[in-house]
Image 1 (cartoon, one colour):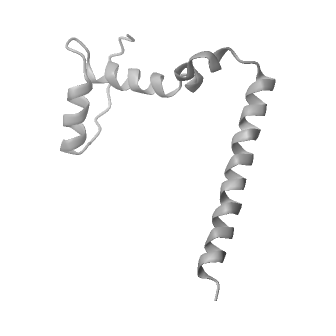
Image 2 (cartoon, one colour):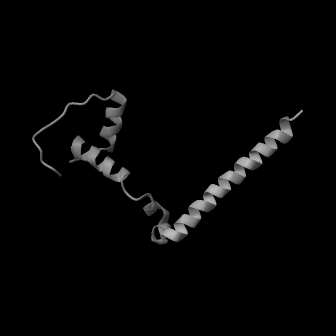
Image 3 (cartoon, one colour):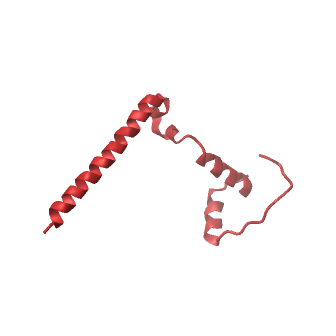
Length: 88
């Protein structure tokens, strides 16, 4: 925790405040909660994919290429099927 005497006032909707309040720990300030949420956003997303976090850059690159190629194939198949069904 950074103990800084300066503060800023921000306005948030009541529903957002209620959501933040539910996320806030018992002894956690709103500043600490917001800081925690920001830090969690900046963490490596691969940590959620188990073994993927230990893969080399080369394998991850190949995996990404395979996903992109799969999306292209899906788009081509969808276009083809659409044309087949709706062409006069």
